[in-house]
Image (cartoon, rainbow, N blue to C red):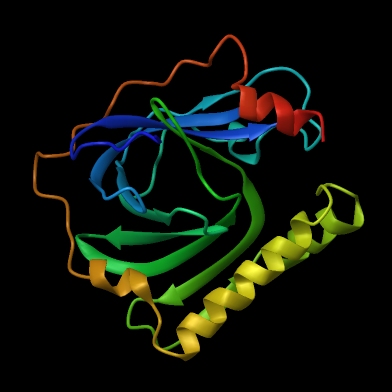
Length: 208
């Protein structure tokens, strides 16, 4: 049975590339019903990057301050989805919805593993407009052979699903529109240490 986390638990979000941790950081759980996992990324959260050589090079965030600098973000991810939806706040107000296309989450004992897949979609807070982001980066990675068999097609399918939801009032993330972190309830967690070895699932992915 996959782990289900309690509100307030600190969990680890790990991006796994080449069977190793590319980037990891802690999140604090808001809710988890076994399908939808909602977790909060607080301003100042420490970010840890894996060392050594990766097929995609160092994580692009490694060149910036190794803490989350923006306002806090509520990350919403559902089992089986090839994307997560981030409610981004500014000054206590909802700034926009940021759709991050990524590998479906793989739950672990202390959090979950995934991998960002370049493509993003930014939806206005009122839902009236949206803008694609990093399309050129995604297509360049496709051309360079950076995705495994079927992965690019899966990203495009996830993108099509999100657009269908937008156009047909299927925006499940809207139920979180009014959520805000209660003052003082989301302290910044400590850093997540890199593991000595990849999980069995990650190791199998490295052999693809």
